[in-house]
Length: 231
Image (cartoon, rainbow, N blue to C red; front, side):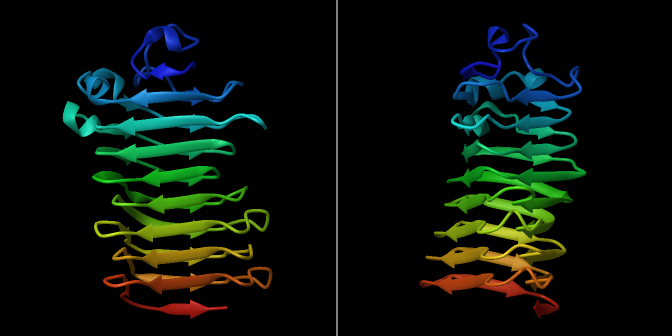
């Protein structure tokens, strides 16, 4: 892939725009680049449904998927199976919807959901820091998933999740685990942000130390329906 609009065939090595005809879409080649989905892209339904999406970059580069104002075009980005945001990769979403069918979505890079952004993964699980330090910021956006691990493997330490500002909501239908086997991970709910969990685990294995949850600022809410386990 090359920098530019998602729907432009000349930006892709196959010479064709993304579609469900491909087994997977990859934004992984060298050189820093940004691929954009906007309202014009979202007006072309055939390019907005794909099977799998993987984004990562080599050391010294960053590959970014920018999804902005796609809601104005009428179609969400539908990833029918797996979404992998790997090392040296970034996702930025505003006024747009991304749905992930499963079996999983993982973030080993940086993801940011801004105003009117919606990431739906309600039938699948998420990993914020599967193999690398990762960060998630909801700044007016909504993330809805089945479950999520923050800092899954020991090498994915010091991951951060920041849910800040009115309208920022992270909803877990099942469980949220902060520090499965890694240390120093943080979940911060600030300035009117909200996190909703059914069950939460903090620090599962002995190696999962110094994991913290902070709720601060007027209107910030953490709601947990069932069990809460620390250590």
